[in-house]
Image (cartoon, rainbow, N blue to C red; front, side):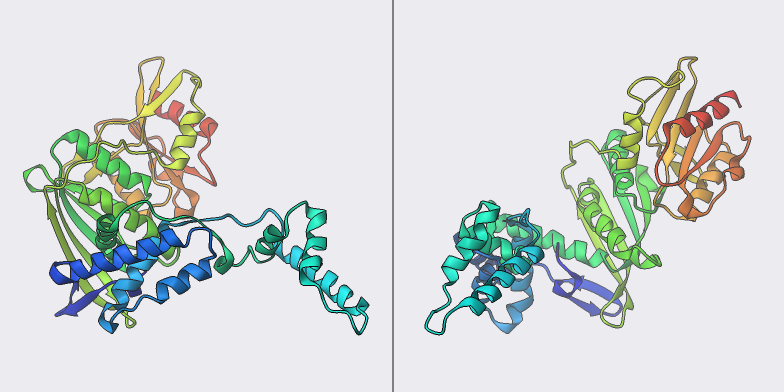
Length: 402
């Protein structure tokens, strides 16, 4: 992924415009992409610093420097380097340097220091050849990592990744994003919303015109902490949004060294939908594992419902629990969301949500289960570090009997 400083963009009248790869610029970018990919292939087996030096040796004009750096960054991200040695490199260096110092002190005036012999002596206790020992000595330094595999894709794929990466990097500076999306089927909407939830983004969904939906997403610069982690999840979400049949995005950003407020707009139409099913968030998937066998008559499966309460908002549950008695309760996990999202769910319940829903929220959001105490159609489960199947069943049972 590109960093913000590698984005080719200009600001005019409070609007950010990302410079696309088109015409002669795209042709030149394709040339550079082919050159850099060929270099990466030729450098397989060599150290990271040698790869970097080979990239730097390519002559580029000053106006192309940012483009070239961006292409190199994406190639570097796609390369596979060897893992660090199983030996502790610091301890290994201490052993070798101590041995070298002792060997030098023992040398007679007419003797010369024999480096290969020393390395062979140091390698014997570890049962490795001297060349592996030398690699292990500095394996904690990225510049010394060996390139195992170069990217298998061609220049055109790299340019497509570059186009997307520029847009993703822009969102790393977002305060708020509003996306108007249109999908061909209800199933496509459900998959889109599930993928949003997998990224644990803080968002609210409301119906839009002509069967579309508006998604308001908080950006990383709306937070006081976790900016980098959240921004990465937001950037990784962009391909899913762009896969909708219709998409219009407006992002409020803090841009440049001064973090000046600017607006970024993006519209796409006609992108093919993705058939790849959405994954459950890790903590939700772990909870499903705990229900591989029924617990007190409860079974679980991913939910496929969307509940819309006009004038209030939407609820997109993660799971559907069914009891042997026929009772059905939905679960929505709000672990990484804002407190506002919790209060909106409380309002949905109080205003007459059409199904029984249990909401799970992390204690980090500083909300109390008492806000929905004894309500017949909704409850709040506040958990600490992870979701507990036992505690969840207790809440399900109270809600079932309400």
